[in-house]
Image (cartoon, rainbow, N blue to C red; front, side, top):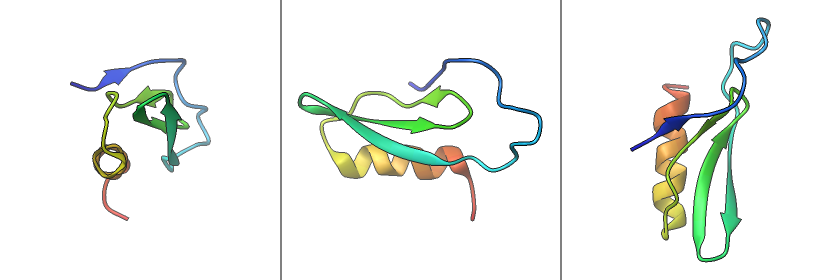
Length: 57
């Protein structure tokens, strides 16, 4: 399950920019809006979470 963390995005930020970060054996997707995906063991799943959050390109 995904969670919403952090402050609201700045009003002029309309594009979601996602990255993945590793912590130990886990990888998590993060977004500039403050969203964070669940910890995943597979990097591909974390990238998929980020793509779903960012929406269509």
